[in-house]
Length: 129
Figure (cartoon, rainbow, N blue to C red):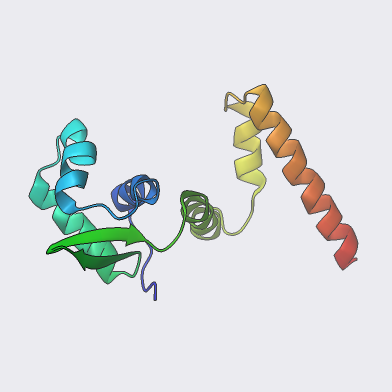
């Protein structure tokens, strides 16, 4: 059971871990920690915090703990954005959309994806009316 949302650095690690299932602390330290100048002990501390918060599980395989996330990368990011919109933007998506229209570099592929999302929102709104 997830008891607390991850912090910014924890979310970055958790997102990375979602793409690397059943991985050991040593492997994470080498592949994720070294490029970011994180000590093995720092990686272990972050992973154990995530486990205690309910975001990671671990299983002993041949004497070594292997860690796995409970959710995929898309679900993690969706949850993080939802928390940001709720806490920081007071539930309003308008500032986020304004940022996209004024500041963000949006590729044609991303624009197509955004248009599909808007179409889904319109369909959902029509159904609930």
